[in-house]
Structure formats: structure tokens, C-alpha cells
Image 1 (cartoon, rainbow, N blue to C red):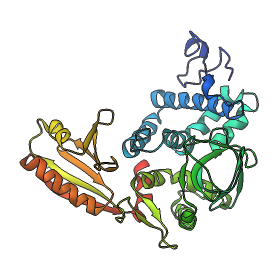
Image 2 (image 1 turned 30 degrees about the vertical axis):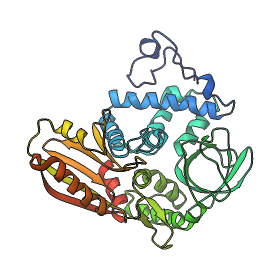
Image 3 (image 1 turned 90 degrees about the vertical axis):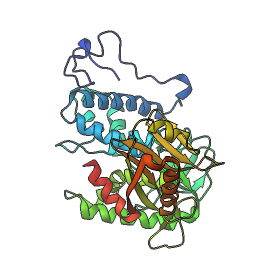
Image 4 (image 1 turned 60 degrees about the horizontal axis):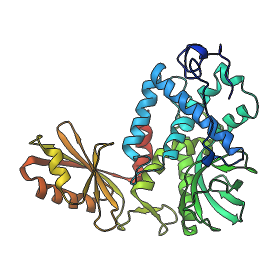
Length: 374
């Protein structure tokens, strides 16, 4: 990506490039040798860095930056990207840069980046690749055939066929025919690449996810703020639904028992109910130490939260945090919630008082996630 020294700096500061990011050194979007594939994917990944830099500049300099930062903070706090108990970083960053419409213009970071004068000067295939990134979305796919170099996917909900290179397939994923993937693909259908870490499910979940995608599109059409061409509805519904699926991936798993309305249960086979517990803190001093001393509570300094983990396999059962005068705890079933209430009452005694429990079921989440981001 070549930028003229007198061009506006793509960081968005309003200064010329030579007096901003280009004052001391050329902007370097090269990839480390170990990440290079020798394919067009390398060009995509260089542009990913440029779009990410532009997103940071919007947060720092643009009037819509506060809204963008709020959305990013929300996703990080809710879904803990990049942590053992959260979603992959690639799911978070791709949603933030290519899906989230924000500000008065209701445009994504990538759409705004494409409108920059300096970006319009890019030689092909740069603009073509950026448009592909802008148009990309995460969806469910079933592997129809697998060989050494290609996976052929059928897209649920849209019925499209995708031929995907295996150059950057995660090493821990052993793809088999029939597997279900939730993933973002990039590029044309006949020559696509994997663009986010996939979630992989067994083939028996196809009916559940097919039904879910149809309901997702229908719900989006009913709540969309503007008229959207029918051909665009599916793609836009996938972009808008990423937060819903992020919560699903970290809170529950699909079951096949009801082909009309998929039943969602957690790993203990309990019906998913998202429970938020409110404990009034009576004695604030030393509360962090008391929580950290409770068995099965693990503290993360980065997020300043405690994770309630199951003994043995360390599976996450819930999270806890301190918010002003409250100790807040969240679990994904009422059974776990009642167990946690007893555990905290027994361990903290008079230091806290249980006030209430808010419970949400899965059917109410998609609409609520949309309201939070707005």
C-alpha cells in the first residue's frame, strides 16, 4: 500500500502523511515470514492492518469515535475475545471493522476507509480486495467435499456453493465431509479463503442451524430500520447477528431434539437461561481478596473479573465482577445460578446481601443485543 507524502494521512488525523505517520518512517504493513502463505490471502492480511489502524484513528479523532469505542468495549466485556473462555479475536475484530454500522452515516469502518481519497488511489487488486472485505460476513456452512487443497462448502440459508483454499485452515481442525462451520469467508465463491477462526459442529446440527438462519433473516427483515433489497437481507442479517452467535458459542450448544425451534442447552444439559445475579456489597474493603480466596474462582487482571470454573476440567460456569455497590454474577442456567447464590452466601456471609436475579431466555437475546449496540 503506497501513500504519497502529501496525501492525507490514512490514520484520520487530518494532517498530511509526511507530517504524521510518515514523518519518521514508511507505514509498514508487511507480514512476518511465518505468516505468509504466498497467496492473495497475504494481500488481504496487509489490508487488515491498514483498516485496523484507521479504526483506531476514528476512535481518537472522529466525532463517531466514541460510539465505535463503546461498541468495541461492549463486545470485549461481554464475549472476552482472545481469552480461554471467550470467542476468537478474529470474530471480534471482523465484526467491529466490517459489520458494525455506526454514526449518523451508519457505515462500517471498512466502508469509511474505502471512501478516503488516499484509498481510492490504490491500484488493483487493492480496491477489489477491500470491497471483498467490506462485503464479507460470518455464516454457517456445511462441508460437501474435502481434499488436500480445497473444501467445498454449502452455505446454509442462501444455498451458495463456496470453493475454499485450505492454506490457512487451523491446525487443530480436522475437517471432514458433513462438518458444519460457522466462519467468515473472503473472496469470490470460486476462489475463497478462511477469514476467521471457525466454530465446527457435527453434521447432525444442520437442521437446527438451517432453521436458525431462516429465523435470523426473518427477524432482521422485521426490525430493519430501512428498506433492504431482498437479495441483501441474508448477508445483512448475518452481519447484524454476530453478537447473538458470539453469546451462543460461549454460553450454550445446539441440540437436535426440536427441528422447528432448536433447543439450546449448556454443557451440563441444562436449558439455557441467561441469569444475572445482583448482590449488594455491605463491606467493600477486602472484597477482591475474599472473592479470590473462594475455591473455583479464578481472577483475570486484564478484565478484572472472576471466572467460576468447574473442578477438574476447568470449564467456565459463570463470571463475577464488582460494579460500584454491587457484586454482579452471570451464569447460563437457573440451576447454576441457584448453586452460585448458595456458594456466595456461604463464603461471603454478611459482607453481601442477595437482591435479585434477572433471567433471559434465548429467544429474547437477538433483539436485546441490537438495542445495546444502538
